[in-house]
Image (cartoon, rainbow over all chains, first blue to last red; front, top):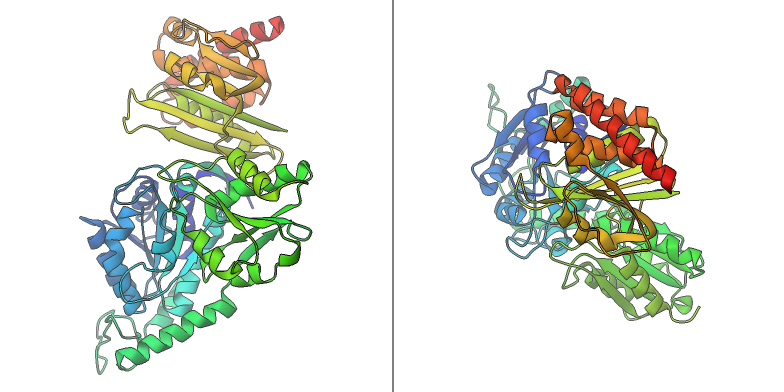
Length: 365
Length: 185
């Protein structure tokens, strides 16, 4: 496959189109503007024939996504941090209505309007509470542009499989930078038609002489008879629990003989990985655990560690206060000391700071 | 082998194009790992603009390097801001037409390129960056000059073919300056 040198945001948009995305609604916000910009150019082209809409706000764009998702076509939106926060009302509605949509957050500094620079301060918003009502989503956290592309491609299949929104938690760094990527194949018209056909059983595409119309509503699984809300919520919970078995994804890097574990996700993990390599060159036995999906959280990765030989865990993220750290702390349960290496507000984490923090926690070689 | 380059200037000077021409050339004509990371203020013109380029034989961990092998400064603001981002023994390229006072650092090499003057002589200030790239490539040998120039024709000439001749003239003039500086090394 041929490598192309692309900007993260554009590569993500192209990957979505190749995965079969045929509807995009969004509203401009830095640092994700190249996604809607690219979509506006690409959607009308003859090999795509999709729809691009710019809403009057993030809330409206998300509501447009709700409408598109209800018709059973592959649809997505993207935004950044405070823009995603504005969408949270409708994200909860889409989770309530069990719609197979994809949401992409190229995160920036916060809270509130924060800064336009990259950050990882939306970890809780993405993994714990993206709206009211306690729903959950699969949350991917790409570390490189290639990974973002591959995740975006898979996200639509998983949304369809579980009939639940899927969330890509990336950041302005990955969106703004450029690197060579291999793009996946364009999904065929036949494949997409077959997928739409499957959705005809529930999709709101017009009554067309059927005995009754299809209704899409919050609190109702499409295609299923209306049930009490509690029953639906129980079924959703069972699904979330099943993810802990079937959807956990993480990477272990050089952990076999490691006496210190650096743990990080997304773009921070990319920088942490090179810190591991540099520390190894100096003779420090250091490894890394990197959640590839941050929800479901890969507890198993931390359970498998031999705490008798560990000097500690260094949790690295671009968020102050730390957020990811608390998921790590909850599974490690004080079996080893956990230190943090953090930046926030749009500042990029430095490799030298990670190395310094790791050495401090490691102690004498 | 990893080469990290930081290019700084103000918006409109072609800072991003400088970085992208290196990256496209490396990505399309070599097997190396390449990253490009832009950083700029909110203004379209006149604000600060800089970008980080890394070209490496190994996967790249930190696309925004804290310290770099090379810094290219297109104005004095960038020169003063980034002079301490060069590794000891590294090289700083300065647009000597506008950077009149050299910073006080003796452990790095300064390559002075009067890029703005060259561009004016050629007839368009917009080719300042091409002159700088020419000097940079001739001095560092990071990429084959003919490949970089071909990328410039492909990427910039597609929209503005009338600029090809000017870009080439600026690039070649820059190469002469870079070669002369290298000979003195």
